[in-house]
Length: 54
Image (tube, rainbow, N blue to C red; front, side):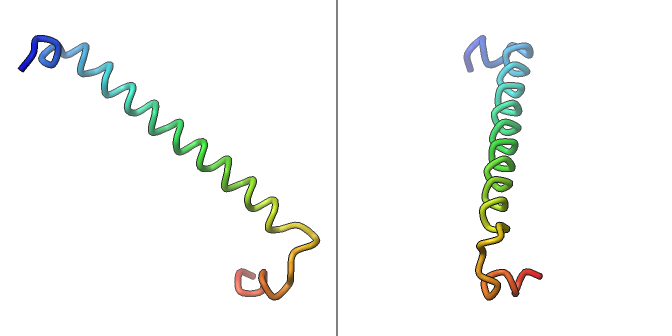
């Protein structure tokens, strides 16, 4: 085990970076889903396609 791995501050920084990356991924995924919904729920959508979701 290296000295860096046993340093609590280093471990905390690593966990914070991982949490920030996970949060960024979740936020980016939500933004893409909203864009997709805007495209699907437009006035030009086929009613037969939308009917199962109503």
